[in-house]
Amino acid sequence: MNLKNHIKLCVQVVYYGVKINRFNSSFPVGKIRMEYMYPMNFEEFLMATGKELLLNKIKECYLNIEAMPTFAHEQALTLYKQYLCVGGMPESINNFIENNLDILKYDSNIISNIIEMYIADMKKYVKGNIESVKIEKVYKNIPSQLAKDKKRFRYNLIDEDGRKRKYETPIEWLISSGMVLASHKIKKPEIPLKVYTDEDMFKLYLSDVGLLTSISEIKYPDIMLERSFEFKGAITENYIAQEFAVKDISLYYWTYGKNAEVDFIIYNDDGIIPVEVKSGNSVKSTSLNLYIREHKPKYAIRISTQNFGFENNIKSVPLYAAFLI
Image 1 (cartoon, rainbow, N blue to C red):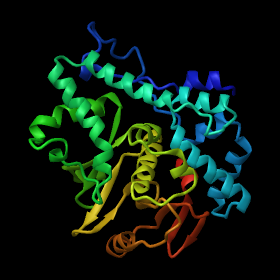
Image 2 (cartoon, rainbow, N blue to C red; image 1 turned 135 degrees about the vertical axis):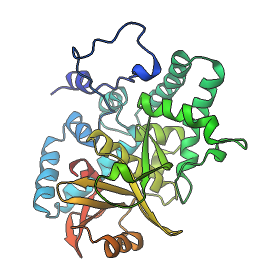
Image 3 (cartoon, helix red, strand yellow; image 1 turned 30 degrees about the vertical axis):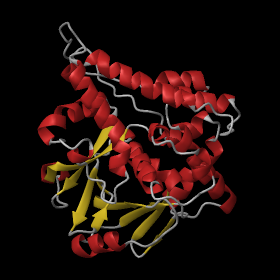
């Protein structure tokens, strides 16, 4: 599939649905099918960049839980890091391809322009300048929220007078528009997860990891050369949230006491499964081990730069294979 056709299928339409009053006429109930378009995920990024053979190998190793050959593993990790810089916006990926997959020649202004257009659209679809200012403040504040050790969203980090009643509607607008993703804390890991969520405890992620990298002013060498910096964990977590959202996996997380936290809790055919996210190859899993002892899941998942594997009832999944979960 060439990229132009791929873009036609994957182009992100920022859909400001009925809740945001985009339509001024009657809505043809039952005559249309709703489709929510996300940024291109990492699987689509590999397809668009002509890495089908590598993609097939990733899928094969995931299904068989066998390690990728070292060369293929390193190649996939390099592409993953490039994806963190470029993101999943079709125009951005197209420019990356036109520059022969050279991140140094990639035009980063494309993502900056997309962010500016997002901000402009806020003013177009919101009644009143005050409300659009609030929405913009929330959106631009998300990187700072994710920089905290505990990434739970706090209204008072937006401004000194930040309160739920002041920013609840702008947050709902951003979620409804698809510009941000929300992950809620679960009170207990029971089926169905949705009814055990704490609506006042949540995290917000940007819809595209490339937007997060850009708005946070991350330099590409910091990612490509694997420099150590604390915010790398937030970027990685945002990437996983985006991959899960594309697959219609609802976003939840779990905490225990003051320090224990599992990044994602998912529900699949094997039951409720804890998912821990690491930006590097660390296997230290204090919170995950606590969850396993307390709730005894069928297995747990650790996503990191490590190769595929299965040990101590923990399935190791490389970051580049998160789309297969």
